[in-house]
Amino acid sequence: MKQRREFLKKSIILGTGLMVSPYELFAMKIPTDKTIKLYNIHTHEHLSATYWAKDHFVASEMEKINHFLRDFRTGDVQKMDPALLDQLYAIQLIRDTNKPFQVISGYRSPKTNAMLNKTTEGVAKNSFHVKAQAIDINLPGTELRDLKKLARFLRRGGVGYYPKTGFMHIDTGPIRYWS
Image (cartoon, rainbow, N blue to C red; front, side):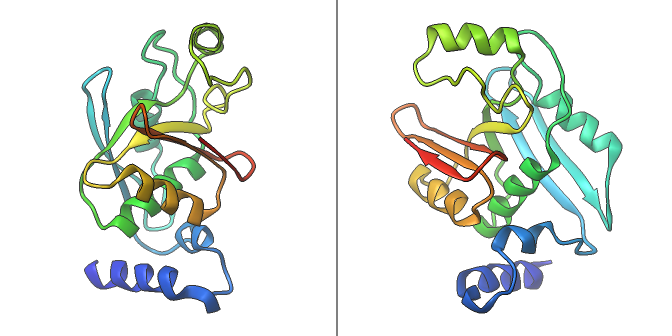
């Protein structure tokens, strides 16, 4: 496992000759397991989920992740975009960490998003959170600016950087960056 991680990290770092993007490298159907660790700062729940095993998504683990990333205000659950999980997995793998991502926001119901749009600056009316394609996170032991650089390097969607409030947004929408 350690050798595979080192190979992947070096391939990405040195990968000017790679014929695939860093994200495509992680999304390949490598016969391995993909586990992500999460901690929800609002519900104080912890989750370690192996959402990919050998060559397929694990339905029961995906259900756990969907529930974990629910709208904590309403309890509404939505199927999260698996590509978002692959982004988290890639970051975790490159950082070579076992620390859980701290989740600030996963899925947001339309009701919650409308309320936040009215009361909080910077909340998009058509947020990818409502589409279950976004997550706001930080990763203990990793500087937020380094997390931002890594997410931008993966080039797999939007990356919002919020250093004053201590989190970063990633989504699976079009590639774009903002602060």
